[in-house]
Image: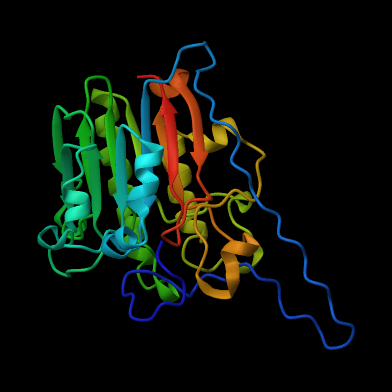
Length: 311
C-alpha cells in the first residue's frame, strides 16, 4: 500500500486509513505520550519442525517506486539479505525506464517485470531470480485485472511462486466493488494453480486480516485495507487451503507491522499495518522454517519480508 495522504494516487486510499494515532486529548491536564511498543524480528529459524534445513529464501518488498528506492540504497540491503528470489511490488516504473543498477545485477541473472498498460508510473511488480524458473507468466488471465500489471507467476520444479500487488479499495472506498471482484478472481486463479503444484504467494495484499494486524483497528473498520469485505476476501483465501505463514508461526505476536504512513512519525512510533504476506499451500507447510518481518530495513513506507522454506 502506498503513502497514506499522498495526493493524486488514483489507485490507493492513501490518507483514508486512520494512521492509528489516538484522538487528541481533551483540554486540561496534559497527557504524557505513550512509549512506542516496537517489534523486534527474532533470530532466523533455519530448520523446519521435522528438522530439515531451509533451502529456499524468498524476499518480498513493496518499494513504493523502484527508482526512488534504488536511490535510497535499497539494493544494498538486498545484497546483504541475499535471497534466492526477490519479489517487488509497486515499482511504478516502465521496463524502458528501469535503473541500470537493478537491470545489471549479476546476483539475479533472471529478471521479470510487469507494469500498467495504460498508466506509466502506476502499480507494477517484479521478480528477480538466481535460478531460472521453468516458466514465467504475467497476470491471472483476466484483462480487466491484467492491464494494471499486478501479478507475476514463476514455476519451479516443486512449486509455483506468485507475487502480487493487490488493488487498494481507494479513498472513500471507490474501488471496493472492483476489489471484491479481484478477490474472487484471484482466489480462483490461485486455487487452479494449487491443483497442479503447491504455491507460495507473496506481496502487498492490501489488507490487515485481523485486529492484531494493525495498530488502530477500531478507527479503521470503514477504511481501505480493513473493511469487512476485504478481510472476508482474505479469509476466503485461507479457507481455500492457503496459510498465513507469519501467523502460523507467531499466532499471538502483536505490533508486527510491514507498512507505516510517512505522516506523524508513524514508523518511529510503530503505528502501522501488516499488509505484506507469504501465504503457503498446505503441502508446503511441513517445509516452513521461518517468516520474517525485516522492519529495520529502510527505503520505502513498507519494510521487506523474508521466507525461509524447504522445497
